[in-house]
Length: 564
Image (tube, rainbow, N blue to C red):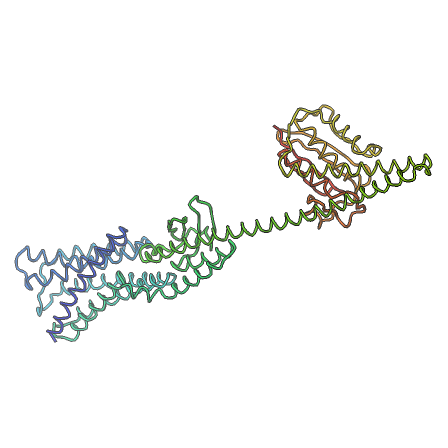
């Protein structure tokens, strides 16, 4: 039995030395405070296990006794350093910190105050037995805290961090059981000594795997996240919209590290998407930088220490998500361009069709009138000729207006309209526009413009816009039509308001489209180009033309131009 115990103890010597090296390497790699506490804890334990057998079993000189006490002090510090590792992620309450610190100081001071340390097989004096009891209580209390902290903290973590934390928790509990069996062992040949040695070996293995699990084990643990990651990549490859990309890419990022929320930004800092409650400040925000942008993870404080590889996977998935977003943006751009081309082709077709239709009527009428006058002038009375010539004149005026509108549209599309604002007295100009546009119906318009109002506008653009608005108002709304103008520090506004039924709500989105006329309008006169031309002139003037319902009923159009 003694030989078996000695063999297991030699195995433990090698195992805890490896654990100490792994802990130091882990700290050196990440340089985090938690890693430093782990390295110190296992270096202290490894020194006790490695150096202890080299010291005499019955120290006699002061130096030998001091060396034994220093090694025991290292053993006293081991659970305290392990406790500091466990609470470095989430600080404990003040009362627990004071209790743990106080007990550790007392046991340490007691260790150096010991006058005699019994050797193997020697009877324990009462003072040493009380010391061993205090040592055991101190060790058990701290490892219970460590076990509870690490086990419960792993609940919300990803697979690998959770299993590592729980292995460390089990290792802390197992080494405490080893200590308890060791204290109860009567000799090295007892079953308790063997059980203590075996539990110590098991604890060392769990500490080693918890601190530095081999790649094959990490991959096996990570299988659920790997499956989810593969599914996310497949979904990202098929995503065609920004919403689909965010929905497929961000939730797996959060699952990889057990994050409660995740936020993705491009290299310029623009927010690309978010998942979860990014306003929650209870957790630690971990930032992962990649060539494709930056990922912010609202996760636990354990993630940077236990989830290094998971953060690397997040970086990879973030890069693929950013690429999918670019692809979705290009797809949306291509789709938008295709739809714009289809709309343009439809507008062109409608333009040609409607222009031909609108021109055909006056052309056919003019042709018929000219043929009639030419063929039958000698048989027509003077009154009949005058009547035909009057109709002929009206039709030529109508055709001329339509051609001018078509030319206006072509110039506006080609940005060939030269806008030259100049200081203009508004009321006289409005009066001229009303008279020229409405002729005998000019009396149906109320002009509410201050005679002193002067604004910098392009006269031709103002004529085109206001005349179209006035003609539409008189055509679709009963008199009176009201026109007003005002200027403040930023804008010059001209408002034309009628008292008709207003524009049907379902037609408002198409109000300024070319060749569009409401089927509910009482009149179908006009070409459907007036408002489109008016808004185009307003926009060429760096302004806009806005529609809103008038109260209690009617339509109100407002020309808004910036004041220079």
